[in-house]
Length: 254
Image 1 (cartoon, rainbow, N blue to C red):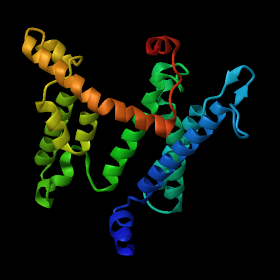
Image 2: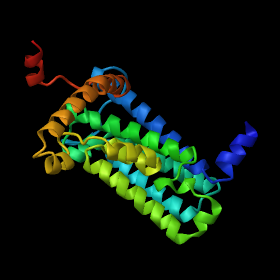
Image 3: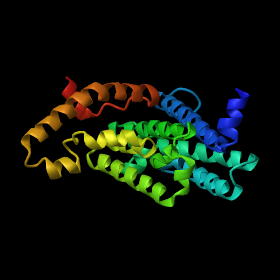
Image 4: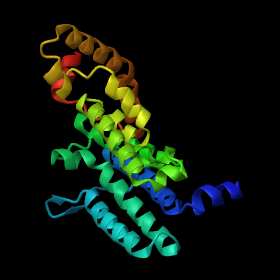
């Protein structure tokens, strides 16, 4: 275990990244626990307000992210200062990403259906950073040998090609595949060669006069969402708390 830690974490300089990711995950989980207790009216925790202004935890999160980020840049990649900066950055990022939906909508949608975006983005962030810790490099550069890495043209060609594939997957409405494809190009390639989602720019541009392709895209999207969307939402509710039932939705369920 000691050899693995030294070889895979310490020597490559990944300790700050691991500390930042750990602080990020712990901060998000603790924050969600506290907000759920506040929502239920249990425990000593209360919302923080200054007069009539509710201070969201994204505010200290931004401050900590800025402090940790600048300290990390100034302190290098090793030593206690770098580790401390990574923890501060991870804590701040956890607070910020927990209210990602609020930043996106510029509204307090924390416990609404739109608030699910925060949990979804946090899970995606943890997965992507975890892949980086495992040794994956963006745009498939980790798959090149030493001779290829010394060739600037090969590196630029690999990065450019994989970027275009990820962009194509995004254009087809496969945002998650495009994100993971930045780290694992095969994922983006899989998304790029398959049918586009019916609401994507690709479908609107190229399926407009192809009724069969449009119908097939709708059917595949329906089966995909039915298979994955419900389990995904159940996991999000377990992790971050179920959103409030909106009046319109409550009437629909009767």
